[in-house]
Amino acid sequence: MSDDGPRSHHAIVARNAFNLVLGQVATTALAIVFSAALGRWLGAQDFGLYFLISSFSLFAYVLVDWGQQFYVIREVARSPARGSQLLGTALVLRAAGAALVAVPIGLMTWALGYQARTCWFSVAFIGVSLPFFLAQGYGLVFRGRDRMGLDAWVSVVNKLALLAIGLAALALGTGLPGVVAAQAVAGLIGLGLAAQLYRHVNTGPLRYSAQTAREVIAGGSALVTMMAAVSVQPYLDAIILSKLAPADAMGWFGAAKNIMGTLLAPALIVGAAEFPRLSRAATHMPTFSIEVRAALRPILWLGALGGVGTYLFADLAIGIIYGQRHFGPAGAILKVYGPGLFFIFIDVLFANALTAMGRATALSVAKICSVVLSTALDLILIPFFQKSTGNGGLGVVVAFVTSEAVVFAGSLFLLPRGSLGPGAALDLGRAIGSAAITALLFQWLPPLPFYFGLPLCVIVFSLCSVVLGLVRRADVQLLWTLLRRSRAPVEPYGGALAPSNGRSPVG
Image 1 (cartoon, helix red, strand yellow):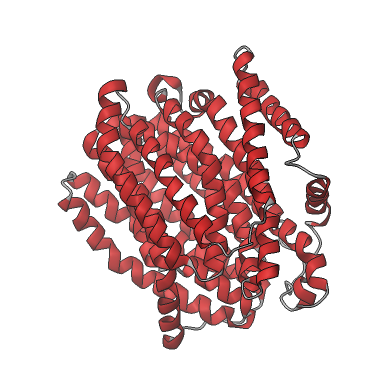
Image 2: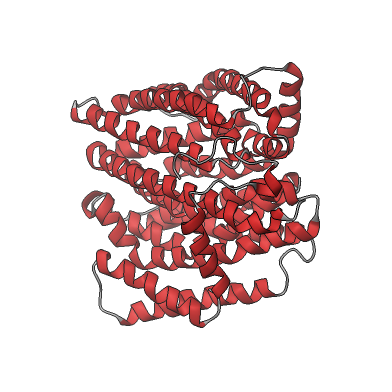
C-alpha cells in the first residue's frame, strides 16, 4: 500500500457513501410513494399477496445470485482488469439460474396449499424481476471499482420508471397484474441504462468463461449459505404468517416490513461503501481493524437514531404512508421493530467485515441458528398475538428481534481479537444512552406532529450524542470531507484502482 492510501481513505469512503446516499434518498422517496399507492389502491389483502409473492421471488434470486453479490465485488476490487469476464459470466449464470428456479418455486407454492392465483403470480414475478436482476449484475462491477454513483443511477431510474408505469397501470384499473407487468418494463429500462454506464469503468467487452463460471460458483458457495440464511427468514416468516393469520394481518406486516427495509438503508450504505476497502485490507490485520473501527461509530450513531425514531414515530409514519383506516395495526409492528433496529445495524457492518475476511461460512452458522430460533418463536408467538391482539404480525417481529441477538453474539465471537478495541463498548453505551435520553424526553412532551417531531428528535439525539462523546470532531471533519470532496475523482491506494473516467454521474 502506498502512502497515499491512508490519506485517501476518508475521501473515497465519503464519496462512495455520498453517492449511495443520494441514490438511496431518491429510491427511498420513490419506493415510499409506490408502496403507498399500492397499499391504498390494492387494499390490505392484495397488498399482502404482493408482499408474499415478492418474498418468494427475493428468496429465489438469492439462490440464483449464489454469492455473486459479495464474491464478484471482492474480486473486481482486488483485480479490476477481470471485471469484463467476471461480469459476462455472472450475467449468463443469473439468466440460467432464473430459468431453473421459476418452475420449482411455483411447484413449492402449490405444494404449500396456496391458491392457483398465488402460484401463477409467484412464477410470473420471478420472470418480470429478471431484467433488473441482470442490471444489478452490472452494479457488482460498479461497486468493485468504487463507482457507487453508477449503481445509484441504475437504481434511481428503475424506481422512477416503476413508479410511473405502475401508477399508470393502477389508474387504468389493471390491479395486481398491471403492477407485475410494470416490474418487467421498469427492469428493462434499468438494464439498458446499466449497459450504457458500463462504458465508464473501461473493463473491456463482456466475456463468458466456463472456467470463470466454475470459479464464481465455487467462490460463491462459501457465501451463498450466509445469504440464503439471511433471506430464508423473511421467506419463512411470510409463509408462516400467511398460514396462521388472516390476509389483513399479512398486509399490515407487509406495510411495516417495507418501512423496515427503508430504515435499514443507512447501514447497507455504510457497509457497501466500506466493503471494497475491507476486502483489500483483509490480508493486513492492523489496516483491517482501522477500517472496521472507522465504520463502527457512524453505524452506532445511525442505528441508535433510527431505532429511537422508529419507536417514537411508527404510528405517524404508517398513517401518512398507508393510512390509519386500513393499515393502523402496522404501526404497532413497526414500533416493536425500533429497538431491534440498532443491533441489526451493527450486524450488517460485522457481516460485511467477516465476509471480506472469508469467514462468511462461519457467520452463516450463527445466522442459521437465529433462523431456527425465529421460526420456532413464529409458531408460538404468531397465534398468541393473533389471539390476544388480532395482529399476528407482532409475533413475527418479536421473534425476529429476539433471534438477532444470536447473530450479534456470533459476529463478536468470529471477529479477530483486537478488531474493535476497548473503545467500542464505550461507544455502544454512548449510543444507547443517547437514544434512551431522547426517548424519555419525548415521553414527557405532548404529542407532536410528524413534520415537527421528527426533526426535533434528530436534533435532540444529536445533542445527546455530542454531550456523551459519541460524536467527535473527527466525525464532523469526515462529514465535511464527504460534502466537500464527494465530487472530486479520488485515486485510492496511489491510483491503482482509480476510476478511469473521472467523476461519477451522481457526483
